[in-house]
Length: 150
Ligand SMILES: [Zn+2]
Image (cartoon, rainbow, N blue to C red; front, side, top):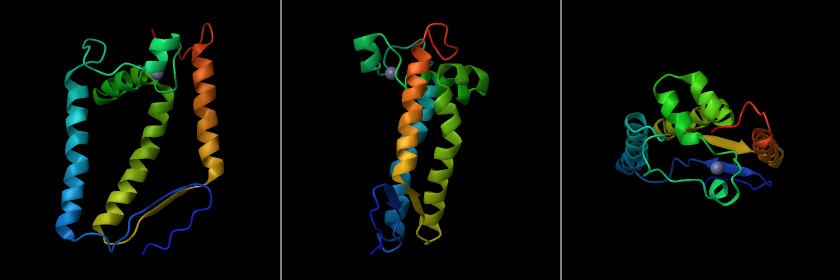
C-alpha cells in the first residue's frame, strides 16, 4: 500500500512492496533497452534525412508548429553535443530535459535503493506547463519568430 492521495495533480509513487529483485531488474531492462535503442536510432539516423520517423499530425493538418515539433531533430542534435542547434529545433524540449532526467533518475534510484520515490505535481504546475507549451506554440508560429523551424 502506497498511501497516495489524489489532490487534483499527478503523482507517481514507486512502492517498495511491488515485485521482487528480479522483477525490478526486468522492469529496468524493459524501460532502458527500448530507450537506449531509440537514442541509438536518433544518434545514427538524422530525422532530417530519413522518412521512417513519425510526422506530426498537427503540422500535417494545419501547417503550424505544435509544442513538440522538432523534438526528434533536437534530440539528434543533443546526442551529437550541438546544444545550440537543438535549442533552435525545440527550446522547450531542451529546457525540460534536465527536469525530466532528474525525475527519472529519482524514480530509478528510489526503486533500486528500496525507498519509495515520490514525485508529485500539483494542478497549478500542470496548468503552468500546459500554458507554457501553448504560449511556445503560439510564439513559434508568429511571423519572424526565432523559434520557427523550416
Ligand atoms: Zn508537431
